[in-house]
Length: 144
Image (tube, rainbow, N blue to C red; front, top):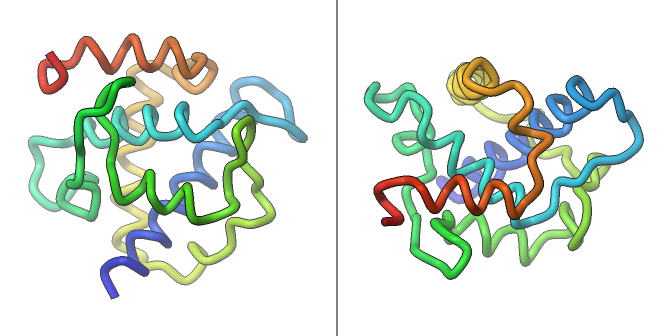
């Protein structure tokens, strides 16, 4: 059951990333949300509210981080991406993201709050390339 909930939460995060990308770039039909870029954004999203119990993604489901050559990666999310068709090598397919609509309301609120706080820190973060996000995540003490 927890895996299903995590998949729903991940799909909701993907949906929110698409909406954020569209808001900042004004591009409605395309995005550059590759697997790598999305994993880096999820890592950064997990750093928001990490000092507040039950108000962060680490306490929600995202606590399976491992060190990989391009920085910290939430392993089960990475495996989920590899098994699903949501993201090809270049872009995220919004039409395939549907399961999140049935997710827990409290979990949606936690995700929404974390995304809004990450946007407040840097609204244009969503426009960064995957390699720029890799460079950014390599600066975190957990990676060093």
